[in-house]
Length: 209
Ligand SMILES: Nc1nc2c(ncn2[C@@H]2O[C@H](COP(=O)(O)OP(=O)(O)OP(=O)(O)O)[C@@H](O)[C@H]2O)c(=O)[nH]1
Image (cartoon, rainbow, N blue to C red; front, side, top):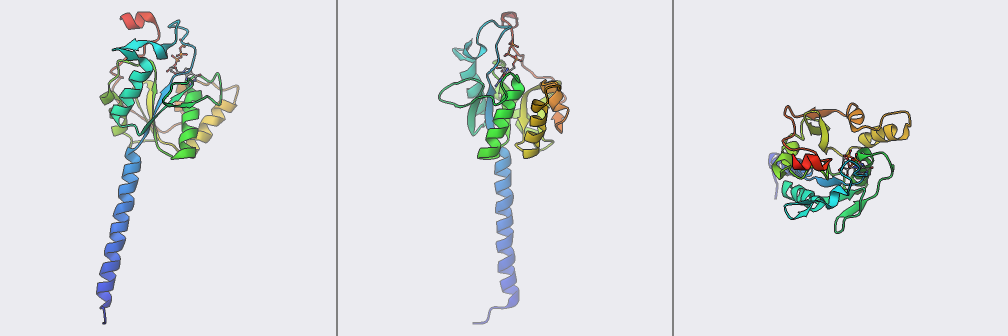
């Protein structure tokens, strides 16, 4: 049987087309999938007690933040700086680096395991909603990282090897400021034009307010 060349080309092209579409779909799905990260280390000095175990609507702040991340669509929840079974625990590789140490551990984990982007939250924003977190994810195509206005946490962050290199350069340099704000100056990030619709709770008086 003789098959005309144009038929072969059409079949080949449509197969290519399907493969390309699958590749695009796979990339889109990868873009949507993200890891939920809770920063839960530090000293809680201003609060005077461990913030992770404080109660919000009948559960600990840590469990509450994990529920918010799952509702927002996190594929997996990991906790940095504090053991919190059943969640994956990541110790800080740079101790005493503050929240940046937790961000570093999470980024390194993602790059070594599945390269998924990270939605990183502090443990001390229990009044946030899942929708507040999803808002960051929805702007993920705009830059390497997305934050609320003048508020470095929570942050949606792409897992990229160059991010890790930048971050380690800051953490390895004793003379540089470890502040999150300082690190963010070196990250191409998109700031939503609105302030976060929730508050950080660092002291008992913040809670009462
Ligand atoms: N993994 C990790 N997380 C941290 C570290 N320091 C602070 N965090 C977390 O980062 C978020 C913001 O922390 P801060 O409020 O700046 O510090 P804090 O230790 O919680 O509180 P203070 O001692 O009162 O400053 C919180 O969710 C902390 O649990 C750290 O060294 N490692």
